[in-house]
Picture 1 (cartoon, rainbow, N blue to C red):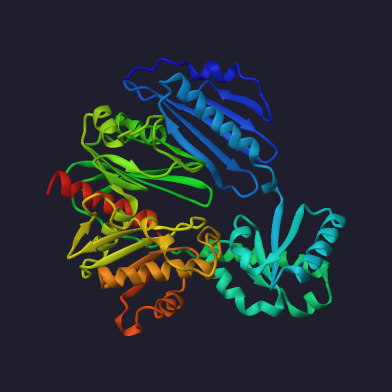
Picture 2: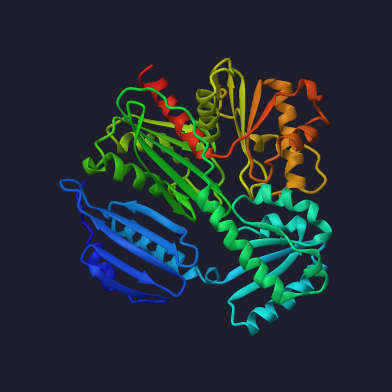
Amino acid sequence: MAQTFDLRTWIREQPHKGYEANLADDDHFVLQTDYATAEISFYDMAPDPEIVELRIEDRATGEARFFLHFHPVDRDHSIQLFGEMVQALVSIRSHQRTEVLLCCTAGMTTSFFAERLNQVAEAMGLDWVFSAVSVTEAYEHGRNKAAILIAPQIGYQAQRVQQVMGDVPVFQIPTAMFAAYDAAGCLEWIREELASREQEAAEQADVQTCAQVEGDGRILVVAVHAASGKVTIHYRVYDRGTLATEGRVIKRRLTVADITDVIDTRICSCKAGGKVDAVGVALPGALRGGYVHIKVTREVDLTNGEDGFVLGDYLSKRYTVPVVLCNNANAAALGWHVANPKYKDVTFYSQATGWAMGGQGHVVGGKLVEGAHGNAGEIRLIANRFSYSNPLHYNAFNPADVIEVVAQVLAMDCATFDPEVIALRCDLLPDMDEVATELAKYVAREQQPKLVHVFDYDECILVGMLARCRQELWA
């Protein structure tokens, strides 16, 4: 593999549209807007081709909004990735402001208060923006907000909203402040609450860790999943079961080239920690003989521009080491089982936020069940046959609707597999007692499997993918 495209020179020649560009040195470029900073770094990996790293950081939050690395061998591919980075950079606008969402039963009462808060914030010279929605819309519109404020009359729902929203702080507005429309007092109160929450977060860490898997050789495992408008590719290199290195790629859309970029930069680089002996990739969709059956969406396109494209064959021809593919929910089921070996019959259910239906993996008798056509766990084949309060495509961000989908699929699992435990990855449904209550409409409580909420989906996938590689290659 030889480098054939001079990306450095090409970048220097590009017009600066919507950003300022600075050349730190010949190996580092910096692109800036008022809201974000992009860094382009070149790393010498001789005798292998160099690696280019693209990274965008939100200047207001410090959050990585775009991150990937690749070998700049192909001209068109390199230009495409640079273009995607620039598009992501210039699209980061409003995040410099502090955006706060107010919620009440229907959004009417809080809309007046939000208007008043905007007026006072402007008068005080604060770059704060307030908006209001009904509490049922908070789960969709509250993501990426600095905080969510719950009106006093529905204060009992604050804990529920906080459970679902995770890292987004949720506060109940003090009754006296809300009743008096004390916008100035409310602004100061919010600032104090956010500062207090930030300090608490710095002092606490909630880490869920899966088990290690003993194995032979060095294995690169890759976990791919899409949720909430972005795609995450999390990779690790394990050396005989021990973690050697890891990293993440964040993009808006997944293509085959994104997967091969990750593999190329790990498998071809001695300086990345040593060459690997095998690669395992966990993907969304049903896998049949190397063919990935998944609908092309705005987040995912694994067709490589070809009808009937067989990803397994493509990767096997591209690399000299074995490549093992697996559905990501199947890998997660296997990984959860590896971490909890006392359970022999396990169902892993993954419901990504914003997706109308999820996917499943099943371990029965300690062995992963994929089915004759790779369709075991493909909820899309059956979920739209059930009866719901609202049309299925409206369910994606509403916990009250999502729980209907989940409970009915779990009832089907109980009727077919009757697992000992169901591990549920669903940010909208963190309360397993609530899920059990909904499931009780179909399966009596005493006959239900144990329900466990999963916080770290990637951890389960990566450990499961490691176990899958070991089973196929060294068992």
